[in-house]
Image 1 (cartoon, helix red, strand yellow):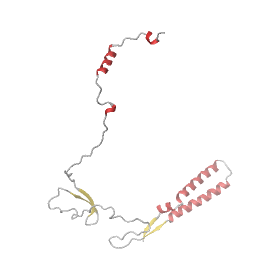
Image 2: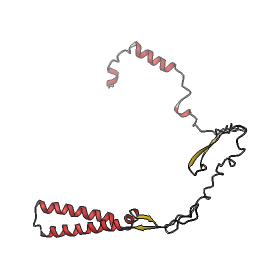
Image 3: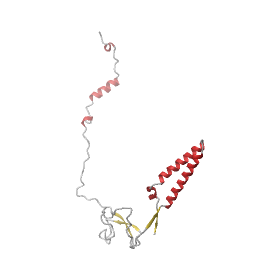
Image 4: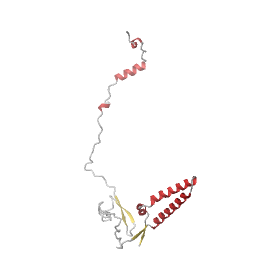
Length: 186
């Protein structure tokens, strides 16, 4: 028996195909073969003894009247400028624990410059009135709903009742009262 592949004549390759095949065979293997790549790594290069030039420093302070003012510490300041930023009223090095005070709800505010304590009274009367109004509206809707026989009017009343109940759920809690407390100074 003769294999079928040997009985079928092969077409002659075109000159362009032969040239492309010859070029592929003649080309040397590239050094960037996928298996030969080195992994790329970051490298730390220390700056050495060179210090970076300072561009100055800004800080917030208060002027003689107590108004906020922005100060600038220029590294190329004139000779008659104060020698240190502290002399010009600049803040000391930032210390996060220095100004930190525990924030508890019952703690009174520290006294201001005059030495007088500030006293305030919180009132939730407006929130209480609003919740009372919503509860009354809910009761009226429930009464109307119990009298209504059916149809589209009943569905509308049920939707209104669901809306009022949702609003009550959102507002009748301590978190809502705290957020909407009105403070007045004594």
